[in-house]
Length: 557
Image (cartoon, rainbow, N blue to C red):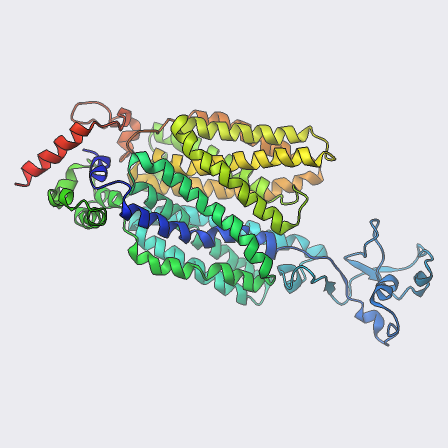
């Protein structure tokens, strides 16, 4: 018998599951905010060379600030003061609007820079003078963070498969918050970059583990709802974060403000259950019975669990419990698993690259950065709410492939629209953002249903690793616009269109039981009626569930 049958008997979406869902919903807040943190703390405000060296004898005493800049800083083609150069000596003749002779010596900044603090009190650039020749270092912190997220996804996927979901979730919460807070005390940029890497490495475990826990504790008919709620947790953070950043303009305090809420996740961790599926698959049926009993009691289904003994759980999943440990190599040992890993990897890479390629390009709307970020988050609400209908109407495969297809088409259309048509381009960009949000919300649930229980955490760790690789290269793709203004749009649209075809090759999981073993994927494990378990739908009749329940009662009397 399948785990879904027992889960349905004790209510697969009762108070117990809703408690787990709510705890994990708010547990993702810090992670989502850290994903966007670089958009605000890595900003390089307007700046110019410090002119203190030219005013050594207080010769500027009777000049206004504007006049001081006129005689000290050369003007760029757009009429603004140069950011990285200054005159070697004051050019007082410029006060009479005469032009500067070409032989006037211009040198690089000699005594640091002065920054425009009207929008930001402090950023990474103002903290460590990451401007001019060091300008790229400020944005590099975003890539460093996502490289940490990339390797952390693989590490926590493997660790949680070996040691369980619950303990590794606590490790992720505690270390993620610790490294995040420690980064605000950095005494150098290198120290900050290292701590930022470890923040991403540790905090990413919370999302992949919580996703698995949510899916493994709910019944089949509620998995799509859980997938939508999971994705809305990101939307909630994406909309809240720009409001927090608007009131906190110092990079240190902003980092602290989004790291401290993890304390709530650490406290509520005590109410998070371990995955009963994982416990059974690893031969720990007594512990699995303990959590299933808690679930039944909270869902007011005590009469079901009373008729079942711990040893009865051994009949649910036929696998080599406790006799072997699964690793990432098991994702590629067998033919169908290799195919699954390849297809999901390509899909995740494209979904993440397209989604964050759009999100990091916050100048698309022509609004200020706080409002732009808020609008990007707000756009996701209708897009993700539509997932609930689309998954039920068309299934996972069509929804995944279709959302990627329309995202790619939206990006392609914008290539042919002149840049002076800002309103039309904005509307198309909104549609592309909505489609990318739909594809991201779908792929998380879809992947968790495709991988079998024994390697599900490894599979999610692998796909998350590939996704973060895509996020890491997204900023580099946007920089390709320096070569051709539409280059990034061509790359992103090509990725979306290609991945749509790849996603269509994945198997449909709507209405199916979650696969438990690799044999289920390969179609070689037989049920009592000699039919492959992977090919059986989860449209189990009520009578068969009652028959199974009655048989357990007979066995236990």
